[in-house]
Length: 124
Image (cartoon, rainbow, N blue to C red; front, side, top):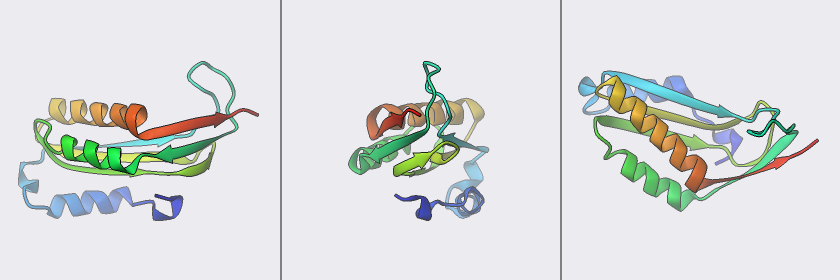
């Protein structure tokens, strides 16, 4: 998915609220991962090359929709050469209650980071 296909979080929320089963949704949480100017170890980052395993992403989405209390899941992952400040991903999870939605969002983002994307940080 390229930056050109970036969805609107507002549109995602509006669509989700019209879905069958939306009446059982008590909250939506959204995550927006962004390229930052330093790595986890504090080293400077100028940009990033990011690739996506789309097959594994589809599998994770299928699993995510089966998580306790989850009523809707949307994911967009950017791909290619990304600059500092560029969006890496959007994840939106809707569900019944806060603990279930927070747990699902945390698990989905962790799976995407560890099993779906390959990030190569480019140093200045």
